[in-house]
Image (cartoon, each protein chain N blue to C red):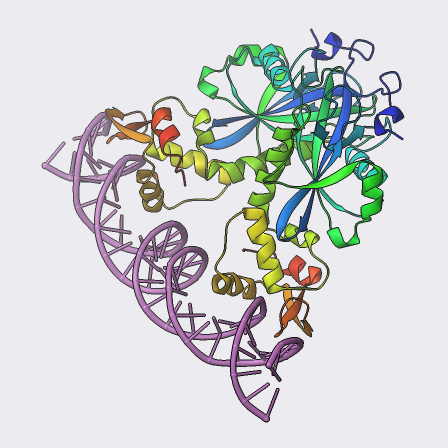
Length: 228
Length: 228
DNA sequence: ATCCATAGGTGTCTTCATGACACTTATGGA
DNA sequence: TCCATAAGTGTCATGAAGACACCTATGGAT
């Protein structure tokens, strides 16, 4: 008996969606973008930005399109997290959803457009009630982000091109939800060749000003060492 | 415009499947179970064990069922790896596949039943030509396994209840594809409280015999420290 | 009874990464 | 000129990890 014969195209009635866990950094806190559900089911709760997949669309494409429809942002950094497929996870009908993490730069974000869609930013440690199994989606995304942030430069997607060390440290503290020693943080950072110090200072956060840095992707490609 | 309105149940024509990357340990090598494709497309190539998902079936259930149908094994350790969803990955039609890693104990395996299904074990560093995108599936599964094996006790699913330290070390060497120093390996192992030494020896591999150990899941739950 | 072949088992040293810790410096505004 | 404030700097102690060589227990051969 061939396994394939058990199911054919007619019998399978499962919809496939993507859901995006969109992270941003603001006020020294990691935040997550959610939309308010105006319709049943779960009316009044909040949910992730998501949508169904097109028939001829790659999974990654679908995630980018869904995000673009909401935010107008393109070329956003996205990573697949995992598939959620409990049979009863969505009361409207059988749906399997693939979750994606998106990291976006708040300052490039069109906040008005967000409002139009009924979306809102929430600090990740103070989320409202979420629909369906979206809490587990957010949790697995945060866990993955925390794990990867120590060994890969992904967190830099949450900062502008030029940034200061105190900014970067605050970002890491926000993501990891713990405070870091600034001398140790700088020591590690100096061991990563891809960080290049500029001759420019950011004077917005202190009288003394802090030197700006940038992350050189080429250097990173040559020397993948990254440990913060 | 609501995103949901773009697609309804009628328009989406995507099948969803699971594919299992089944690992076993034999002859001091990590091996992977594959089936020979007797039919087009890709006739003659080898492929992973897979099947479509039932309408009322959890994703994890589907993976277990597919594995059971082939091997007769139940209660196998399985972990989701990721979803593969390129639009053109399967020439027969649009299919999204969720890959699962399964770790099984070769000695409990019914080898005759495997043969009936045209399945065969291959060392992971010497795989035959694989159908579709199954090579990437295998690679991502191996990468994940190598990462997780250092910090979690998953590899123990590949060994019997009672095992010797040399066996465990050979397993790690096989998975990681590098040789380890046995003194360093034992030192680390002794720091993990969940390993308990038995008063029994396995005499099958040497004249002197090697002490048997077992992994105490309760102890591990109390003290999650694991580092090999 | 002795010898031998073989895999099992054991400690030390060096190096390096990490965490803990306190003071000086540059600057703008009062 | 002073002050408030965030930026920036170095050392020490601890512990993990890698490199490294010899003794031991046993079964089988003689």
